[in-house]
Length: 205
Image (tube, rainbow, N blue to C red):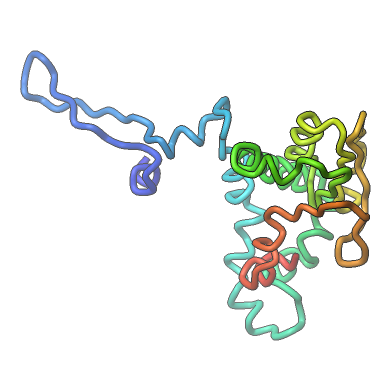
C-alpha cells in the first residue's frame, strides 16, 4: 500500500470519527488510480500487469551481466532468457497474449485522442495500414467509423495468427523491417517509442 500511495495511485485522507478526535485510516483512489480498475474504460491494468510480469522484470537484473558480455547478446532480455523478446514471445503464448493485451490497453487511449483530435486526417483515404497494429484495437474503431476505407493490421505472424478480419478490415502477418503493405496512409503509433535506444537494448526489439 505504501508503494501505491507513494506512486500517487492511492491517497490516505485523514478522517475524524464523529464521537472523538481519533483518526480513522482510510484509502481512496486518485484519478491516476482509477486507471488501474479492471472495468475502467481507459484501464492501464493490462499494461502494468505486463510491465511487472517476472519475465519482463528479470532483464532489469541482468544489465550488469549484459554490459560485461559486450555484443554476445543483443539485449538484456536475451541475456536473461537466451533469445530476443519477439523470438521469446513467438513460442510463449502467455507472454505473447500479455504483451498484446498491454498494447491493446494503450491503444484505447491513443484511439480516443485520434478520433477526437485527428479525425479529419482520415477523411478521403481509401486505404490505411496499421504497422505493428497488434490485435487491431485502433484499426477496428477506424474501420467502423470509415467504412469506405480499407484497413489493414500488419504485425508479426504470431501476433495476428488466428485473427479474422471482416468487411473493410483485414490482418496480414510479416516483418516491417522487410516490407510493409501498400496504403494511402501508414500508421505507426508507438513503434518509434518501442525502437528508442533504451527499450531496444532492454528487450532487443
